[in-house]
Image 1 (cartoon, rainbow, N blue to C red):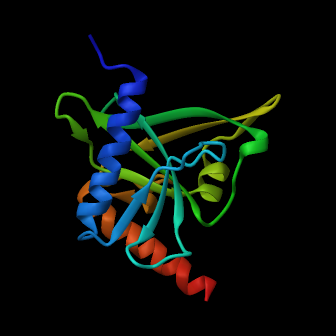
Image 2: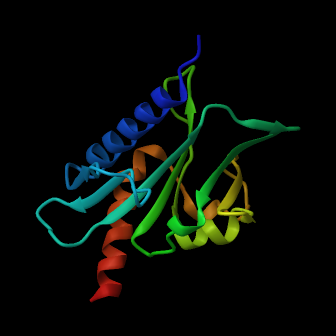
Length: 171
């Protein structure tokens, strides 16, 4: 019997948090908001640096789609239009959860919300936007998602770099 979508979500969120904390040498702190009204799965900040952080929305798929030799991560989900956030401090983490290996496939994707909303084939239907991401998993791929690719083991360092860049821009 396959895992449920709720179980998948919990596993992926915990794996994301683990990779952030271990991959940053313990510098990153991860907190779950009490409510999810703003679509934030995690608030992330650097240990000891208060008042500055980023929010992350976590999405995952458990199988890749194949087209010939290409293996694509295809992730689609709706967002209520009133909850759509295009903010430099709001990021998406999107991963393929390999159930056989019980870990994330390489690469995972860390994408700023505004970029994701612009490039993930947005379609408005009534009160909702639907987004459809189709990313080639091949390391030599040159698709639109290439710049957001991250080796799962480098996730902590990448997020530290993102936060450092945002802090410099804010200053």
